[in-house]
Image (cartoon, rainbow, N blue to C red; front, side, top):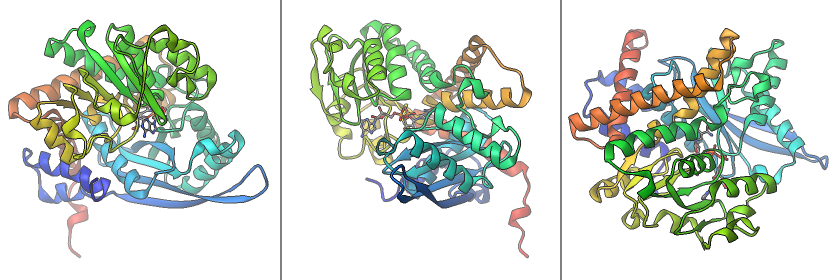
Length: 427
Ligand code: NAD
């Protein structure tokens, strides 16, 4: 495990900086977050007791525009994690050429232990605590692990109460009835799907002969599994926090998704119901899933899943990082040596923030787009940036992650330099 996640993230930056001509002062700024806020959120629980939760919001860099990034509710949320996620958002927005900087937020808790009312009070308390740090022209939250459209709706409502004006553009990933964009919920997976289709064409890999394992069966993981399955790929394994299932012949992903949604729990993924009786399957652990002999591995859960401890045992030929930071930098080296191609998070999962940008544009213009337009524009953006990164990788003989960082650094460097030197004068 790296010393800190942020120091690990910075190693990717260091590597890419070797290929970019950049003022060292500009490069130095990118190693540190612009501002980090730590808040305490007192919440009245349903039983009348008071619990105080710890929350964070980090704005990493706003040279290219207001900062943008999701909010995560998870027991392992720390300031280091939130800073690293904000770092990745900075580079991701630059890769997709969005007029945004990077940010991230989180609250340290297990949301499964709270009632819906408690979660709503917690969310409103979080917005009260960070209200001066966010805004449509400052910093715009969105969903991430264990937050969703409902939570974003509460955030927008609370912010509007505080400001005494309806402010839909303060948050993206909202319910459509509150100004959310069509296609936002599927955007992360859809974006990853476009990257994968482009890559598979270039690699001459036919979907029908391609086996896939997906780790994480939430918003991003379950939707990409279904998109791939519908496009003819053989999805042989999926998992969630409690474990996974494997079927050599391929799993019935639409049924598993339906079951999971209906049960509102995770049982369907272990096939306790009738769904998986259709296909014989084995119950596997998350570790086993990562090490399966498949063509494509899609980590879509949390960071630090492929490290120097298990990288040698990875047998997939291609890894598409739908999660943020699932591969550590020391694991990168091992995977590169083994010839495993990694399609990096800052490209692969950028569909979410791209459609978040579309949502923000729609909120500000008051004009709403049909789903076809959202998906068409998403496809254009994802394909164009995939091609760009592919070309950089070929030209400089670097791996795709380094190519993506170089691509982002060029855009970030220009934006930072264009702002002038005010902050560098000695007094
Ligand atoms: P989610 O809360 O909808 O789903 C998370 C899934 O991961 C759940 O199925 C959960 O059971 C599973 N999980 C948790 N711990 C696990 C573990 N140790 N092993 C295996 N599975 C585990 O979250 P999401 O929005 O789908 O986000 C998943 C990843 O995608 C995160 O890294 C997130 O940052 C990234 N991402 C999400 C979006 C988005 O728009 N939602 C955008 C970009 C990146």
